[in-house]
Image (tube, rainbow, N blue to C red; front, side, top):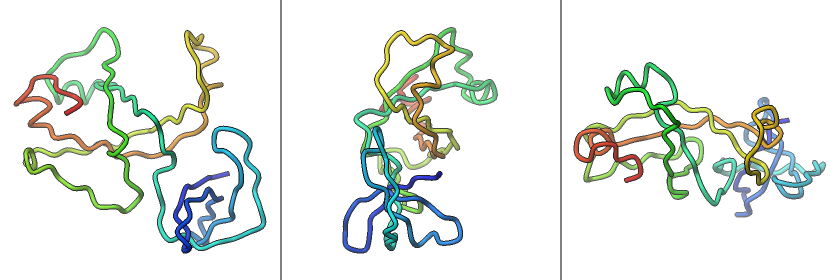
Length: 158
């Protein structure tokens, strides 16, 4: 089941079941995305797709594949390179990406797999990690490479 978060015609933020043959409509789902969800029979118009979640934090992993590490010429990290994206960086599908006036010349994009964590955990065994995943989404990670690589070496969160 593909769940979307959307703005309805009456201005409400709702969860719904996405159906590819009717992308302008969704069957409303009641409940909490991180708890119990109950599909209803109510179908409403989708005015605008929203980001799939409204997270308190966005934790990202940098240099997570060899070819990208080669492009940056930074080298391969011994440990994962973690950085934070601010939650106001999230936009919905089809929304415009506004380029920063301070660094519009080397803006880059990367198709990413976003993993939505569904519950709290700590010191999780590798074999249990997927038990904490709620779902997945496609993401577009947009970075100002001149700031990240040239102007402020290894600046990931500006």
